[in-house]
Image (cartoon, rainbow, N blue to C red):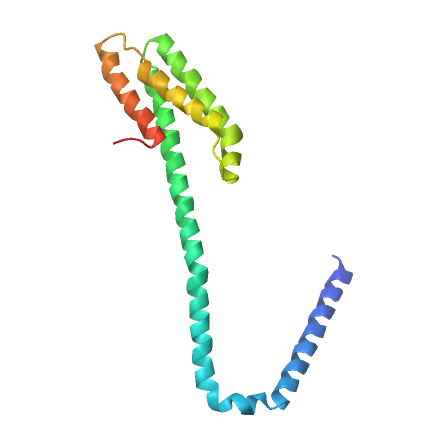
Length: 169
């Protein structure tokens, strides 16, 4: 245990307490108490109002920022679930279409993780990631179903791609 640091901190605390006590007694004997005594209730009300206004002003940005954080979190989760579903349901397509969708999802995910978050943090759009996502959507839309069962699955994949992009109806 470092006793020197503990004694140093205790000494600082003692000096601060002595200074605060000295300042209190100086102000108490200066006559400010007697001067403000008749207005104590009004001063208390004023302090309460200022404190309440400050609390509202302080709480509003926290509420707004927290709401934006939750909105972003929900959008990211929806996109991740949609991309996961694209991969999962793409397995039931013909092998070439499945491979193309997997490759497009992997490319988009790599770009999103690599540069999109930094670009968004700098308040700009990442054109490469947007092109990658547009390519993913195009691959899903242009997938040619091999049979009627794949046709129904293809419609679901198109809806998932739209949902991932936030353009579902």
